[in-house]
Amino acid sequence: MAAENGTPGAGRRLAVLGAGVMGSGIAAPAVGHGIAVSLIDPDRRRLDEAPAKIDHQVRMARLMGALPDEAVPGALVTDEGCRPCGLLLELVRAGHLGRKSGRGFYEYEGEQA
Image (cartoon, rainbow, N blue to C red):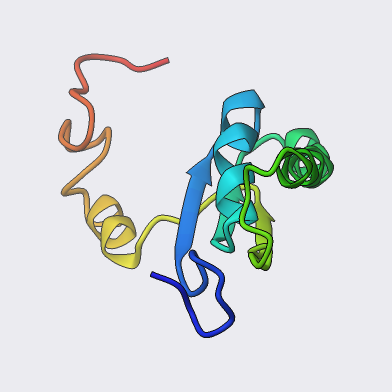
């Protein structure tokens, strides 16, 4: 599915959790094919290093002929994390989820460190 500019991934978005070796390796071909990528990692150092690594990988892929010549690289956005949705926060505050209730994404039993 090519957009008007001929880039196969134009208009598509991808979120990649983790900016380490694997996350950068997943993000690079997506960016190279014109997909907008949000790279999320709590480690600010990894996020700071990721754009240069991804740019290098995209340039190498283009030199090797692994990317379409007409592809316009997608945008890369780095972020330290995601905020929880409002409903989740309300349920925790009301005591319906979380440690106080003993219910949620994990089973809470006894004292938690």
